[in-house]
Image 1 (cartoon, rainbow, N blue to C red):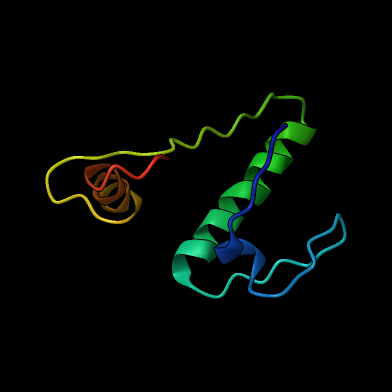
Image 2 (image 1 turned 90 degrees about the horizontal axis):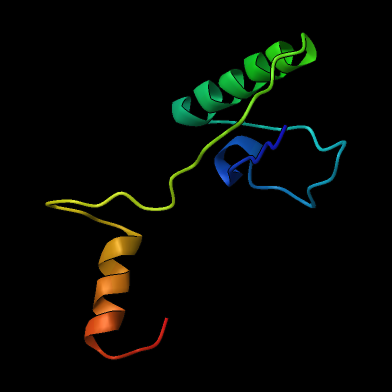
Length: 79
């Protein structure tokens, strides 16, 4: 099982260790954490669990890192 938490699920504090207690505070983070907990239950029952996180999805009106990447490319800044 490969399990990666986002900072939203982990909460703003650190350092992050095996015994770190997560502290999700927004609805998205809470629901993501609940999914992770349920997947761990399924994994303990013997089913393989794999999390796939797509690095970038883009299209019309895209925001965030894709826009930044395109700006850097337009300025000939190497990535």
